Length: 329
Image 1 (spheres, helix red, strand yellow):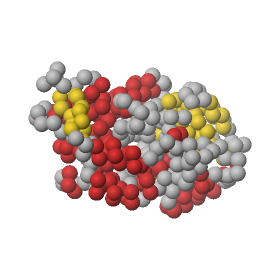
Image 2 (cartoon, one colour):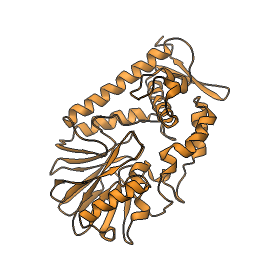
Image 3 (cartoon, helix red, strand yellow):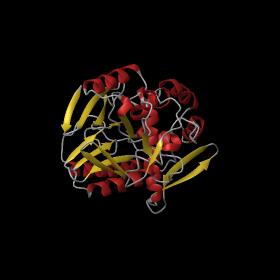
């Protein structure tokens, strides 16, 4: 389904089968040369919906570039294989090293080692190789990505967007902002009826702290047409930013309450005691991929609390354990 947003700006609804996100909003800026923002997973249902929408708009990939808001496979999965001969594919410079290809420094084995050290069972990590869409539906290896820096300008058709670095969800997450119209293509930085997952990233000491600061920064922009990558818009943009900041404050407090029992815990232990909005009666019934996202989110909150001096971490054999800092007890 194609929806007109503004002159020369459209949204294509791309389904994400068997995924709680439900859909991706892929956006298209039309002109003598077009710009496609995000693509969907590398799977048939996404490919069919995206190409059908482009066909409805009369758009050929031979005259279209691709802007990827961030590295996750529900946004990048199809980019290399649907590109035309002269298609440029843009992505934030700090996400580039995670994209499959000869430039990549990311290894899933390293990620598994980090999660195992946080208490995630190795047998469940093995299952994720088949079930985690971040692994199974990612793009084919490609070495032609063009890095985007904050302030880079993208002029297509009637529109002139500026890249805004909004780290947190991923280290190199980028939004596209148009001051003249108040339009902001948000990727997963601000979603309106679900909360973006914030996890720990290699080389980043405080992903959640980065995310909260990026929310405060983007709040200063007079955004009147917020365009998220998933679901719909239900409220004022600035109000939603404030809700997200408050949400993470509440989650940090929940982590502190769990640790107040006095028993040192792994991130896995903390996640098992957290409250989650998911159709499962208890932690044991959580689908394994959702446990992975949950533990990653707890890791990010623990890192943030460590940066605030409220939690301490130490190595206990092969595991990292956490407890309240002396100043908090």
